[in-house]
Every structure is written in structure tokens, then in C-alpha cells.
Amino acid sequence: MLVLFTDTDTDLTPEEAREFGYQLISMPYNIDGVETHPYEDFREFDAHAFYQKLREGTLPNTSALNEYDYKDSFEPVFAAGNDILYVHFSRAMSATFDVMDQAVSKLKKKYPERKFYTVDTKGITIGSLNIVKEIGDLYKAGRNAEEIVEWAAEEVDRFAVYFFADNLTFFRRSGRVSGLAGIMGNVIGVRPIIHMDSEGKMVSIGKERGRFRAMERLMEYVNELADDIYGHRVIIAHADAPDLAEHLKKMMIDRYGDRLRIEINEVNPTAGSHCGPDTLGISFHAKHR
View (tube, rainbow, N blue to C red):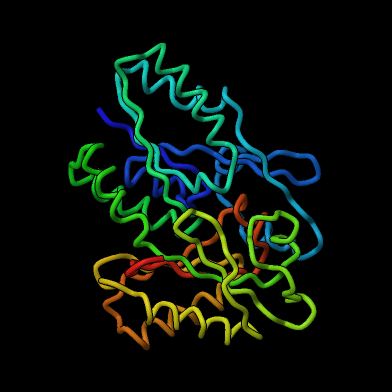
């Protein structure tokens, strides 16, 4: 039997995990020295309360899992005679996957007959979520691990993500985005436009003055790159900015009609620790990233 795994940095909730058959690995964040594991230390994510703390000056940070965390997640599955397919957020964004590799290597020596497959979504939050759900659909349809991995080799780079950050304090602190030098968004109202590239890294590719011009810029990328947009989910993410998300949804429906499979999603707190409140983005099936 094949068991699916993903992590909370992909934005999948426990309810959705059960729907698609995933087990969730919780990626922690730290506030004032207190480490919190999403959906282990709380059952539901209170996005407004979390992002309001950030607006009030809290600066959270994140940390990688250790080898024992991965062993605790994977070993019961191997011991039960099952194989694993882990669909995870971008390897290029965290050293946690080097630790995972070490844990899996040791487990495979103990369970040599077991197989461990991975799909690197080369994304985080909704970019990963779109792929996680597509793979969940394939799994529910009876596809095996080899078929899913083959699908991913062709399709991962066809899921584009474009977003803007409202407050650069968090990205500057985390150092996760290249190309931010010289953008003084906090002072003059300029929002950097960021996307996930084919290496799984966040890159600033432009800037716009004001939120609504930034949303228009996101729409320009959708219009330019969208491919089979009706055959795949369009996912809009926000960091406690539901009005902005609804406005972007309306822009999409006005342009493409109501046949779109649009979902609105809240950015998980671990990823949100890096992007900050009022971030807004969109993920869609594209010609390329």
C-alpha cells in the first residue's frame, strides 16, 4: 500500500488531508522563544489573531525539523509494510530536507524492502497546495507511485505562483527572496511582485505602487501564462486579507467567467512568518512558471 505525506507549509488542512488521504508533517514556527507546531499544538489556525500579532510588531522565525521528527512520522508506515510518497514544499527553501534524507537513509537500511518517493513542488503555500491536491486526485483515482512521480516530472513546472507582499520587513528578515534590493515598499507604498521560479526559489520580478495596481499586475501574468485554466484549480491565497482575495476572485471571474474552479486559502503561519500580513497571491496552471 502507498501512503501519501505532505507538510503544513503546503497549506493543506487536516480536513483536506483526510479527504485526499494524506498524513501531515507539521512545520514549526517560533514566537518569543515558544515553538508551535501547526495542527499539533492547535486544532484550527486563527489566521486573524496570528497576523494581527505580526502587525503589532511580533517577528516570528522558523526552524527545521530534526532527524527524529522524520523518523517518528515515517517509521510506523514502513513498519506496517507500506511505501511512502511525500509531496513537499520547495527543497531549495529549507535545509530540513537534508535532515529528512539522513532519516530516510537510516530507515531504508532497517526496512530495505520499502520504497520512499518524493515530489518536490518547487513551491510553498498555494503553489504547493495546487500540486498536492492534483496528486491527491490522482491517488484517489488509483494511480500508483511511479505514475504520480512521472506526472509530476512533467507538471510541477506548469503550476505558476505570483504574489505581492504588503510589508517587506518579514521578507528582508528571512532573506528568502532574491531581487528585493532597493525596493522601499514600507516607505513609498511599492509592493514587490514575486514568483516561484523553476528552481523552487522566490524571486522579485517587479514592483507596483499600491495594492490594486499590484493585483492588476497579477492578472497580467495570469492572462499571459494561463494554460487549460478551466481544467485545473485556481487558488488565491491571502495572509488575513480576505477583502483583497475576494476582489482578486472577482477580477478572475470578470475575465474568465464562472466556470473557474476558484478556491480561496489562508497562508499557513509558518510560511506567513516570512511573508507577513496582507500578502496576496494566485496559483494557476500555466504554459510555464
